[in-house]
Image 1 (cartoon, rainbow, N blue to C red):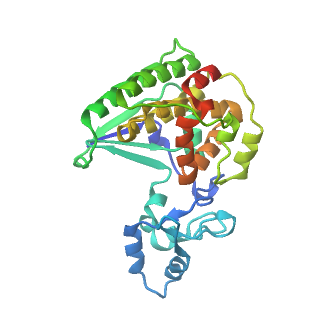
Image 2: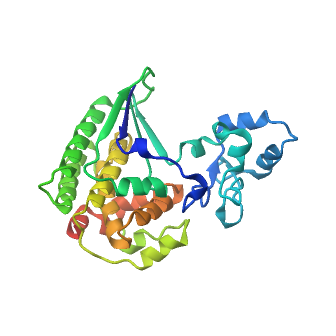
Image 3: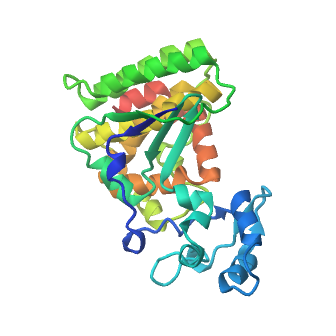
Length: 319
């Protein structure tokens, strides 16, 4: 299998208890089946076993979760912001979500793409402040391709289009606003070959797009309330943000045939940076609020298509 990672990936390292915004606070964590089976093997006399059994519950979707403690803290997050489960039974027996975060892993048959998310402040700093054009490291291992129902022709079309988008973002002769407009046009043309795409119909304001029904950190709400409309600045950070979204989401259109929304996400990611803070922390807050909340992400995906303020022509005007 071919493994692809951004070249900054190798520099990521969790800082555990020193993190300014713990990933163990704000989210409910699913208990995956493999971890649950292991917990059954623990001696009932162990304190960690008693704690695990006492906080397991079901959410409204039927998923097994760990009930959060006050202030939305993981029940295993101790006063030093370290994980008691990790300490007691080892990192390899924590839920798969905890083991992987902030990494995202997407398999496309014989190719696996890996990255780190802006939702982690350390990863956010790493991506936001990357100097120069982001490139990607590739390696091949002996792992067999994963079974999938991906349409090969669609995947190749999207892969070629993403390569073009990467090339546009790395073109030093273009301003970032011009790059993003070119990518919108490229994606809109490709969308016509994939699936009908009817934009608009919801009159929600641009600001209200970012007032999520599930609030994880009140600081994000403050940033939204203090929105500052400005022209997009031609910075390396904005290029890095766009690269992140194109890398992470563009090929996901192989499943839903919605490539235009993926391009919009790159544009909006840059606008989030410009309008709400102009720093890595701002993009981190948005990511934690939206990319890692099923409620908020489902709403956002709908608005990418239906919101009048997020129509392609409106986004071009904002650039």
